[in-house]
Length: 124
Length: 483
Image 1 (tube, rainbow over the protein chains, first blue to last red):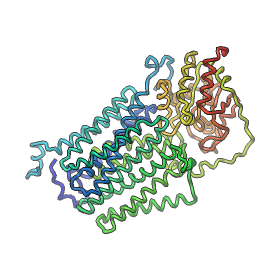
Image 2 (image 1 turned 45 degrees about the horizontal axis):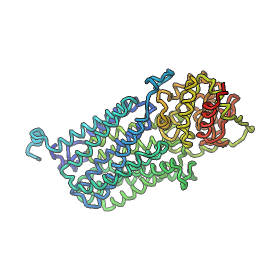
Image 3 (image 1 turned 60 degrees about the horizontal axis):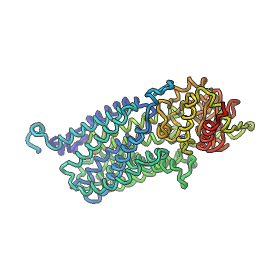
């Protein structure tokens, strides 16, 4: 998207060097994603709450975006890039370990013999 | 590419920026699907793959931004992260709560650092960028990020049971006042930064804010005891997500906002479930650990435990048609899950139905027991939630309470003066016979006496959970004379 909003940046709502996003649009995105998140997470079986937490851990390492921009951005002085690099290290560690341990745990969950468990009884 | 007519420029040739935005859009959709698939054990692994794919897109397309060209600064941290990443992915499953707390700490640190770096950079080079709204987002990001960092480190240390940290809630006189004063100071500093972000003192104010936030995390978690850890971990999870959201507002990045919001809502829902399962409010968990433990003195008559040998317990279980096992943190500590699996096999071989009753706050994080039992290859179809098992408890011939305590304490139903009164519990006391495995004769974590242990139908099996379960199993498998 074109880079048109620089001159707007002294407005209070000013934002978006990149895409012309304003405060209200971002709040919209935030609100809608929160509702989607609540709707989706509520349906996750309690059985899987530990893997759910490690998965969302990995997903919240999306902070990696900010870390890459700062660590690798040409305009930043080295001391800023150093902070970005530490942030990148932290996020990357979360990405690697978060997804891997989630998969490791999920591989262990198996249904009973014959799927439903020969004994019947309550299932989840 | 900033032509005379911006719209025309955007439509004629999709620039790299547009492609990156589209990749972010796809990644956001995949993250949502990832959590959607997580809802069911049958599709959960697909959720992981979707998440990995989305994250790969996010990393590669951010890296592809034209202004990101110091590649060594990116490659080195990624290379360094591989080792710790692999290590943290392969911890024993009993250590998963610590690992989770530690990764919240990393998430918080990343958010805090990016916020600090962005502020200082803009302050020195493009002060115009420091709009009130953006500085507000930075203040939130920094506060949430750094408090999650130290709070989670303390939580991880408590979960790891390191020696230099007390396990019991750590409280001192005037704690509330100190906390409120620190919070007030943070609010005032944040407000000053928002009003005059370009003042000469701004970097120092930011530094003060960082220090306050670091201190905050520590102060919030120190007073909280191990039994409240599932809630605390869930709350820190929400904070880490919200810190990512704030970063999204700082960087105008909707993918960050979306993914952060997903994480935040997950933490929120888990915290609510945990609080409900303990019949406590948020503020009660965060600020109410004090005095909670001061039990109403050991007044009352001396009660007597009725001990029993594992062999006798085995004989009763062998005759049962339904055995319900209630696992708790004690099972995790003793690493008894594999022995439990052997017991499960032995009983099933005799035609006994075995179910596991899982309380939402059993263990040290949400879902902790399920993961441990799954590790021992117990089918998840035999892991039953509290609300579903309770109606069956009167039909249960033998209930084995394995390292659980408060979650089976009938005082939660009957004794309004008990600190856990009102907390939903597993109705172990309604079973025909109760066998409680207990390490020692001391009261449980919350320091509360458990009436269940003194019922007529209850027998105590003292000893390490792993050893006791092993002996029951041995009696079942060896003793043909049991029948």
